[in-house]
Image (cartoon, rainbow, N blue to C red; front, side, top):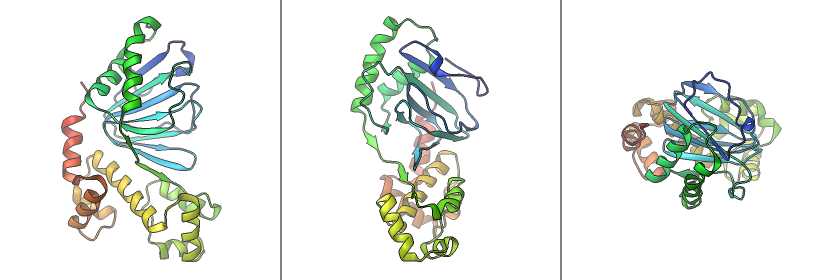
Length: 261
């Protein structure tokens, strides 16, 4: 069902197996919340940041996030053009699926679009065939790891608040000065809490931020500058090493392939 961004909507008030919504979103922050239903969050164009308890997820265009029922999360959108969200009853055979981000192929995209726009109150028997196709598609979809585990050490709480607001994480020596701990201590904290040393963690943060900025229409040179790459070519090399494509091709693909029908 098509809704306006300001409309009040609670998927837990419905009895149908699947409830879908579609909206043209601008800047939006859902706040921390959870649902009694499973949720599939999809961006047809634009990028969505999803915050979990101790994890950041970047949802690029043409990807979908599966969020199991009861998972506390927050969705942040900065100019998303086409937002889709599907909510599934926990009685459906999908409860074994973990939280994940998956690639959406053309067939899966058409299924999501159909579910997002079908009218509320549709009888369960009319939903059944498409639900079957959805279950097959999500279980075979290719998973992608656009996530970043956050450290849980309380000494980093104030710094993490700034990172959540989009501030570029500094180099290790600068971070140690900011939080009043040695570089060795900071390194141990990150390996313990995130499984990554700080340098690799910072690189993953810059990658996810670059994907977000490119999806939102930033120019390549501006992204490289904001993320403190020494040159545009250094940024291009970095992005290609981690994604298999260049920033320009990534941006072009978002424009040409992710427009809503």
